[in-house]
Figure 1 (cartoon, rainbow, N blue to C red):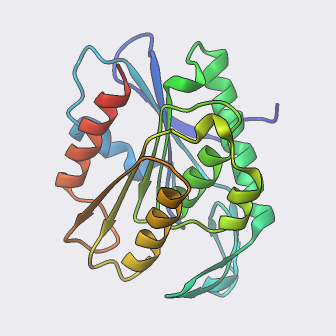
Figure 2: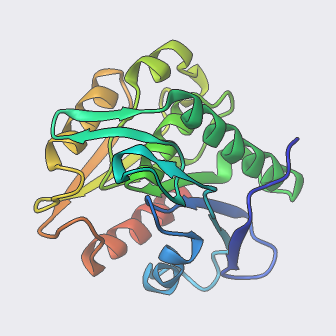
Length: 223
């Protein structure tokens, strides 16, 4: 097993029984969603380990080759889709699989782990979860898209065919257009995955209503 990515960890109570691995967006880092944890409204008795990994810094083509934290290179941006580096996607998937394996070693089975991500991090959450050979507790895909449906279709894991997905998007998102979010939603739904779809009047961001909804959804998974 390769060395785990550097990450910020928060435990809501001693001896966590559940874990959430939460991937940040392009150009951000693991600290981005740390403030969300206390706003989720989780019961004090629910022991969850939140893991916020840092993506490696790489040149990003669509941003003029500027080096920034990224889960994979994006070659171009347009409303029709994203041309992405599939090799980089697979490398990030392997890195998240390493974090899943570490949670297993720390006593949290895969079926008690949720993969979450925002924007580019959500793309990795989708890809990793739907191709993972062991059943996960759920997927949270925020303001995101699927970077390669061909990749997921070719490696789709029966173990996660019924894994619940929470997909949410801002109706005023100018970075990842709502159309890309609905396209991802429709694709996973057509493949038979149970999807909860929520929208909020917001740009490429999160809002308190969304955070509360995520907290309620997590409580339903962590029983």
